[in-house]
Amino acid sequence: MALQCGIVGLPNVGKSTLFNCLSNAKAQAANFPFCTIEPNVGVITVPDERLNKLAEIDHPQRVIPTTVEIVDIAGLVKGASKGEGLGNKFLANIRETDAILHVLRCFDDENVTHVDGSVDPVRDKEIIDMELQLKDLETVESRIQKVQKQAQTGGDKTAKAVLDILLRYKAALEAGKSARTVELTKEEKPIVKDLFLLTTKPILYVCNVDEASAVSGNKYTQAVAEAIKEEKADMLIVAAATEADIAELETYEERQMFLEEVGLKESGVARLIKAAYKLLDLQTFFTSGADETRAWTFRRGMKAPQCAGIIHTDFEKGFIRAEVIKYEDYVALGSEAACREAGKISIEGKEYIGQDGDIMHFRFNV
Image 1 (cartoon, one colour):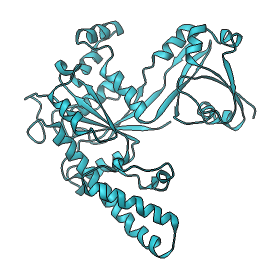
Image 2 (tube, rainbow, N blue to C red):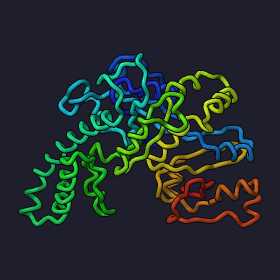
Image 3 (cartoon, one colour):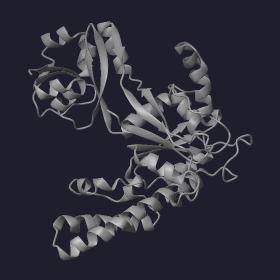
Image 4 (cartoon, rainbow, N blue to C red):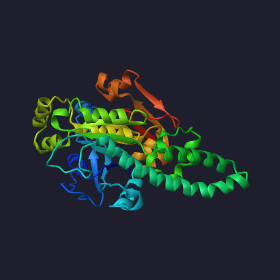
C-alpha cells in the first residue's frame, strides 16, 4: 500500500536528520535552508514485536516485516502560499502525502541557526499552519464560486450539502483554524473528499529536543502541548541528534545499552514509525508457517477478501473463506495445529472485518 507520511517543518528544525535516522535513503543534512529540495522517499520497516514472537514459534526460513513510506519535504518559509521560497513545490509535495509529521524545533543550540532568529516552536507551528490554511482557503473559495450557482438555481441537494460544508470550512480557515477542526458526519466526508485540503490531513507534531529532554520534554514541548489542545492531533517527543548517534551503533545490544543510559525503553525512531503507521490508519495481519512469517499492511475496516487481495489479486477474486487465529491464542498455544485442536481457528466469510494482529490463511478458487 503506497500510503505516505510527509515530514514537514521550517528550515533547520531537524527534518532531514530525523529522516536519515528513519531511512537508508540518506537526505543531505546541512545547517542551511533548503538543503532538501526534491522530496526524499524512504521505505521504512515497521518494528513489531509480534512478528518476532511468531518467528520464534514457527522458525521460518524468511521473516518479512511490513513497511511505511516517509517523505522528507523541503523546509517551508513564511509566504509559501504566495510562492515564497520553495512554497509552490512544498505545497504540491505535501498535497500528495496522506498524513503529516510536523517537526518542531524544541531545543537551544547557538551552533544551529534558526530561520527566524530564535527558538519558538509555537510560532513555527503557526507559520506553517497559516500557510497551509491560506492555501486551503484559496481552494475552498474557488470551489464555493462553482458550487453556489448549482445550489441556488438547480435545486441540487448534493450541491447544497457541499456548499454547507465549504462555508463551514471557510469560517474555520478565516478564524485561523485548520479544516480538520470542522466536524463532519460519516455521510458528509465522501462528498468533499475531492477537495484534497492540506489541513484535513491527519497530523502528528514531532518535538525535536536535546538529549536531556528526550524522556520528559521541556518548556518548549509543554508550550506545544498547550497549543494543540483543541486540535485532533497527537504529539511525540524525539531527540533527533541522539537518534542519529544510536543509528551509528552497529549492534542491537549496543543500541539498547545506549537507550537505557538516556532513560528510554524504546528508540524515538521506533515510536515515530509506529505513530506514523497509526496516523495513516493502518493495521497489520500476519501469515506464518515454516517457509515464511510475514506482516501485511491493511487499512482499518477492510474486509477479509480485500485483505486477501493484498497478498495476491487472485486471492480476492476467488475468495472462499478466511481461517483466522487471534495472535494471543497463537502465542499461548504455540502452533497452528494446537490452535486447530483447541478450536481456536474461526472460519470467516466475505463480511469479516480484519482485526489488527489476526493470523490469517485464505482459501480461494480461481
